[in-house]
Image (cartoon, rainbow, N blue to C red; front, side, top):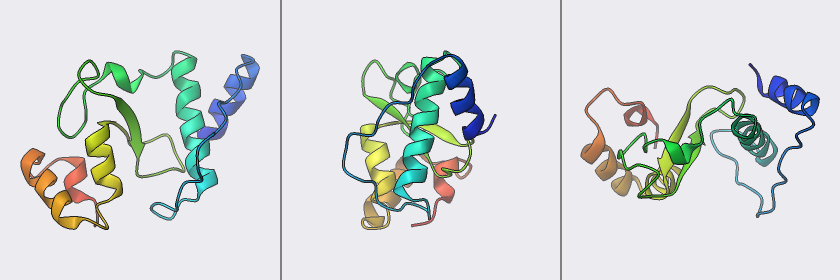
Length: 125
């Protein structure tokens, strides 16, 4: 299913996308504010239609904390598809987004939770 397919399905079910009410997002991995918001809306629609498990019901894909103990949300490195969404706690999510400005903290997190084969160990910084 593509992001466009999600919007078509939601429209057929008369479910409208949530509106972005916060400040504009910065470009991330080459993806614009509009692309990032559209992906966020698509993931939210999937959750609301019962086609995707809410992040709060999962564990952080980096540190392993569960949604009972922490607030989790989905993170994506690719905002053009519905692939590679990872549930992350606030701390790990923040660390991913500031890794370019704070590489030492990112390296520390990767060292603490990585084992050489985890998806986050291969992100550039």
